[in-house]
Length: 293
Image 1 (cartoon, one colour):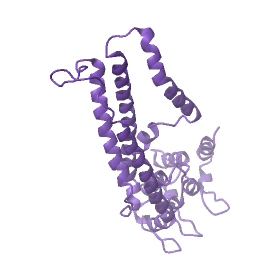
Image 2 (tube, rainbow, N blue to C red; image 1 turned 30 degrees about the horizontal axis):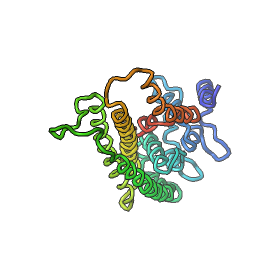
Image 3 (cartoon, rainbow, N blue to C red; image 1 turned 90 degrees about the vertical axis):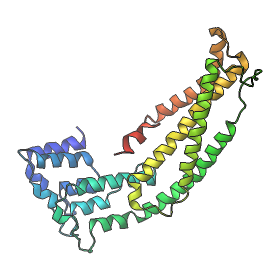
Image 4 (cartoon, helix red, strand yellow; image 1 turned 90 degrees about the horizontal axis):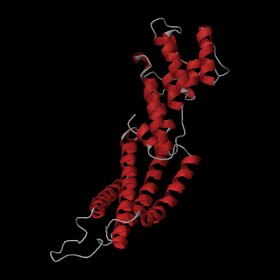
């Protein structure tokens, strides 16, 4: 049984334990919010809001006697490591807003004993994170912009084959050439888009804390996707180019084409599988899961 299930069982069988305080004078809900135990918070919230509530709604309006903090103040103190300051801020904004929706309206702007509202406490606690997030984005913008420019220039290879009497490519009606032309244009388009998006990270002077909630992660997601699509499209275009140069776009027996395909895909595929084995979350899925939450 994990920690979440253990706490749920205690609260279900002994509801009065929700009011017990730890050595710092905090109850179960305050501790769960402060340390970001989302599953425990959801369990407590469901026990409060169900038709036959097990726990009293007064837990949501509890105030820490020593500091005067509401549960929203505790959410403002919580930090969660998420692989980079920009993403870390996004998750912490999400957590703060989740708890904000739980707090009674009359406590939203309550001040603690330091005369701080929860929003003021959040801004103070995340001042350094915002600064480091801006620096991280600037550094990433410089690095990735250079990489995208290198990809664009490396992709400027010539159109495969000669031209006929009408100055049309001789492979114009070949399937491989059609795939090449579409992949080449898509690759350059996505590379240019990625370049502009990464370049925009260099100007972080106007970034606000709220931008790390949706705007910056969404822009990072689009830049990252554009860059990956550009690499994939240009790889396809390059493969078609080599195929046309070697085989002229004519049908080729499997025994000849198989080594060609293996040379192209085996090493990248092995590298990708090794990385996925070492870290299953590698890839685009984490971005899709979190960028629009």
